[in-house]
Amino acid sequence: MRNQLLKLAVMTAFGVSANAFATGLESLPAAGFTVTAGTNQAAGTTGWRECNTTGLYGSLSYTAPTAGANNTCAVFPSGGNNPGTPVTGFTSVTLSTAKQSVNITANGEVLARMRQRVYRNAAATECVFEKRFEMNTSSGLTNPAVAAATFDYNPQLDGSQRLEVNDYVFGGFSGTTDVSAGYYHSANTDSPVFRMGRSFTSVQIQGDDFDAATALNAGYVRRPVNSPAPASSTEINGVGQTLVNPGTPTAAQQTAEIRTNWVDFTVDVTGGVDEDGTTAKDSPFMYVRSGCGSGTEATAFPTTNNTVRIRQTGQESQPWVTVVTNGVTRSGANANF
Image 1: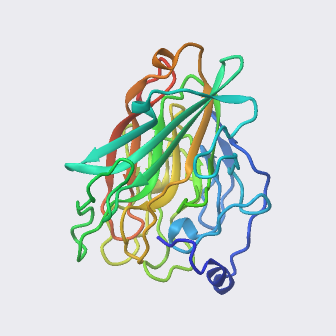
Image 2: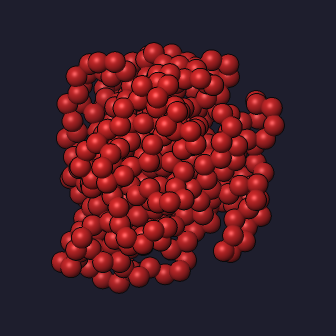
């Protein structure tokens, strides 16, 4: 993982060019997209879009999105670090305090705090579901105070390692054929969204060197195709833990079937100093626009079990980890694969 420090120097050294596209939530159709074979890309049908293409998925420093560059999938709502609706014509639904801020517990301690918001259109037919995570660190969390995290998520490495989140995955969207998704990078955000997909399965991705990557390692793909499909319950697809050097996956280890109930956001977030020396505790604000209904928040927007996945997929030497928790969804949603 790298943060934004020295990002201009990194871009100069490795010749990374800024991508400039229109801002806004991007469609993730149930039918997917056709992709052709190329460097780090297999041919076929994919459920994935690339978003911020700087930073090599966290192996290098990234460039934050602006209105003029690096802004595919990005939105710019007003409100700073407490943003409002990302889509014009949608207004905030007042959720209960218990739903707005949720402490996520794993391994006997608070792993992270999840912010949740819902924005609904006037016709009560569409909603934007927002989630954002603040990872617990050695300093703990504030407002309210939470003790520091200490659990070691990579015991094979010297020292004690906090969870490195490579993917946040949200469920409950099978009722909408074509959803839209995107993210907001606020002033204190520590990672963009590198890619997002209509997928339950997260796909491991590694650079060609753990300490001085210049490109993706051989075999890793930017937009996973959906065939040959892994088993429907596969949380992570890839080579597994690689303790010394990056692995080289087979084609079948880089696929993810389109699963219309789920949206996966690939990021690079951690609650502590990771293997390349940075802490990046604040995720982007992540959004999924989908169908919803009328009614009060208690009935229209329940907390649905097992609809949030937080995954460490082994960007460097980390083992695979999936933390499962509950999240606000539309009424009638489920966590089916």
